[in-house]
Length: 457
Image (tube, rainbow, N blue to C red; front, top):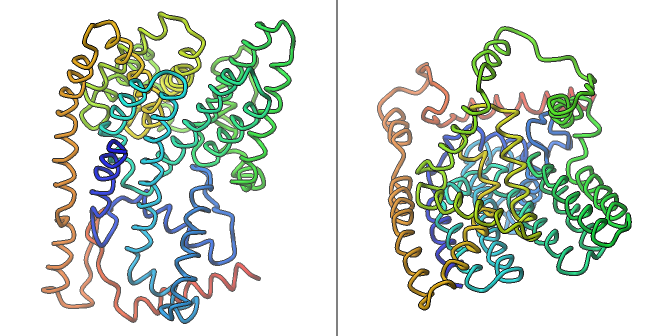
């Protein structure tokens, strides 16, 4: 309970950053698309990310509207639309709170997995590692898909380990596939769980000397694709969605397999050629691995202390070659390998976010086992906790910083107070957000109505 309280404080603390605006274009993109579903068109027409998070936000905004309608704050849909244009902050805050709750729930799941499948000590340490993982804290303060998909992926791990714990029960296979599919419908990263499920099915088939495990794997695949379709249907229905969803899978297959599949034309052009030349020339795999580790150790990622414990834990747990350890580490290893091969030398902290809970559990198991080797195990626990004061200090310091009024907001206030209305200004991306006057809002609204009418025709 204390750990969850700390995780909640650290994560909720900074969600007001940028108030009353969002200066992160990706964040506003999710919010805008979720609001746009109110027009009646549920096709996102954009498939760089699947749509489940957008649909979830759309549902929450619908509840927000209904509450406003009941209380008389929103007399009609038109007033709701104008309110969004005039003051998008409540919509941004609802989205950020949703993502933050997913992050806190991930800490709780990390604890439950450690407790159920290893030990109480490992569970506590695992939850502490993730609670104080800088990247996980601050990625959860923006409206992005990384934290929710991490939650569904670690939930799938819970049931993957439950397959082993319940003597390969079919229901657990199906639930593993279900949550893996839900994670994939949030962000494509969770699809890397499918090989992990295959590992346990092959283990069952070998152990019991029958093909029952492979049959259950098929059940898991069915549940995976069914929930993926249900949660983000236009990835399958829309031709652009199919290309965006499955083009990367085909590209990965062509990299790893001698049998090439060419359903889509290859990427061409000067920029593509330049990227390939710069990133796939000699020893690009080694350079990509080094870059991947550098990002992991960054202060904005896991940090040098937690990152070092992560790496030690991976080697120690793999050395033991226990099936539970293999299942735990299979996803971060497979996901990292795919990232290194497919996107050489291009990694950001948010791209690694999904492996943090897995590595936190591994670190908790490693630290817990290390403590048991000593006569006074609590002293080892205390050493780890003392070391974690440093990342805690960094998180608190950054929360204090982002809680201050953004300089772009200060600039906006000065412009509106000192520059005459109607003056033309050139604004760069991510610059101060200027208030729209009544005429601009009315023009914007009329354009939206005309476009909606044209789409309806």
